[in-house]
Image (spheres, rainbow, N blue to C red):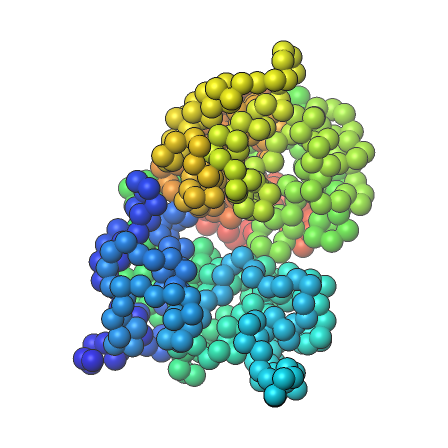
Length: 501
């Protein structure tokens, strides 16, 4: 064991992982120095998730080596990673919703005294950890009864209980409000002094610069740079993230926002409330217009499109589609009314993960047929799927491959493709580029513009500020469950400022 290894909790050399013909990681060399907060940034599809999963034992690399505290491995399991002191908090919760908090804090590792579970001892360990992150909950309450933000903090607490040498945080503030986020960030800053190195993965560059001593940029599976945060600034990091592909490649024609004031309204929303996240939102979308929705996580922007589609219950307010008021919003009624939702969570509501690419691409378009035989041949469905695979450059060996075997970016393309094929009158795009690389983004936005040019209305929410400013004719800003203002023609910096006002 050399001194270089001792200084680094993790050192990877030549780390590579492929999914079919897609290089998720392409020969990565990187050191994570002990007792620091390291940030990993990059666009969706840059390789961040693959890197995290390899370090936590969930994915086996095709090539390369991983050195953990001086011990070299080609790969290791989830159990081995835990024994090596590597803990991970995923963005997607892994909690048992019908079990209590205490059980979730000690999954499959309950303490015992003889044949009995030592709940008192477990509670004595858990309470200080929960207190350190500012979470006060009943240890015997079912997790499913708690708010999403409390559940995310419980996910963090159960990793901290293990006292990891390396703590991997994947978008840890995604379900937290501003106060909760600050509390978590303050905690992260303290961890290195307690002997825990942190790998912090986030799209929020303000958070990255707040907590990190070292910033690493990945792009298309390769290392762009890794430098001390004090030697970087946000414009430099953004340039590293996007590379030669800039927002210019998805830019819209100047002055387009004025073209829609007298056109038919395909969506009219007045004082919409779902009684929880959405309290008072009003907006409209004209035929041929792309309207953006901007807001921080927890502002209500992230629940708006599901509420309009009927996946969340409407409590009050009015929603008109093509001039007709919709009293009973539901996914089934929305599809019949020509409304499509391309969801942010493709695994939960976007795809049939166990079914083939062909089945996933065909089933919405089949439902869209209004004339002719309802008995469609398998060859016809295969032809439809093959056409969409080519149109959306979906990388799959063939259309019979299980969609769950595709990479995240290609899974999202399947979701997008199956809905855009039926050319709905109103398209709700909910953070559609999650897990999609820059090349696919450009292609997606080209197709979105084609649909808008055909007179279809589009409501577009994104967590990427540059996507909103480049693509949208107008942007509705949402804060504390209410629509606060509409803007057009603003740049990224101005929109960030308005969102945070």
